[in-house]
Image (cartoon, rainbow, N blue to C red):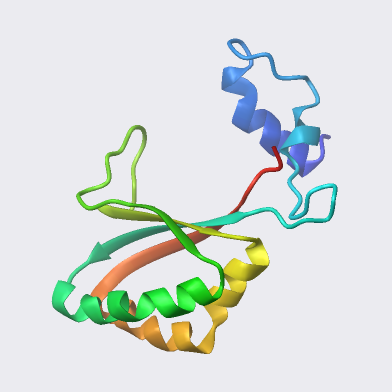
Length: 139
């Protein structure tokens, strides 16, 4: 039986093996770490999906978002000003946001910051949201 990470990696890349030259031991490359070889942290990304039901009230969240976000090194990379354009599959909400942080630790610190936790009460009552944390790669 293959280890879970090898099974997952093979499942993810198997459809592309015929057109792209992936080594048979792709699972080695698939494992991610949160640091580079020199010990520096890798960037981390937060992908958010949102469906806002009350834009007037949601504006309170937008007004208070920047200070806590910037305090933890956050950079807004992309946001959809219109409905997200789906290229394949389904997407849970009409709007998408992509945030970058210097590290996964910075992103977690931002998300658990007491000021931000209090601020999140606004979107919890005015929108449906999904957030995921994705590790960056060492290039």
